[in-house]
Length: 163
Image (cartoon, rainbow, N blue to C red):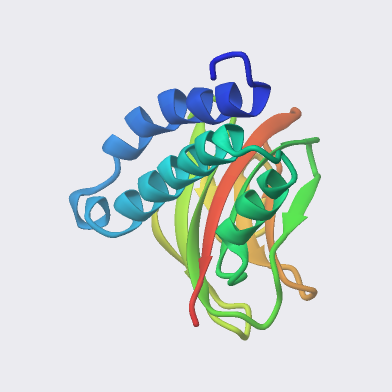
């Protein structure tokens, strides 16, 4: 199992993310933290199940069904300074984003109208488009997670859309 690249990536994600999640505020540990951990563990289980099946064809189907409801987004990407990621428009939800190696962090909720409210954050993570910050704000065409920290950063984010 350890020779599967996809399994190793999910395992690395668990090793990296679980200590960070454990530092979340108490009021998040029993809802958001549990959901994120369960989702990552579920992906690992699906990989193991697909690897044990006779046909490898179902692997993509089993992994895709993880987000078949369209309610969750888990992503990590390299974002240049002044670059951004845009979330789905017209939806209500909540999420968190982290820049770099836990350099900046923001937990937020948003409305279908694009109003972003900060739940918790580090000093340089805000809900306006301001230089020198990790920004989560209404960009007109959707909620933007923008890197304005002065250098390319890995932006990791989790978004949970309400039904």
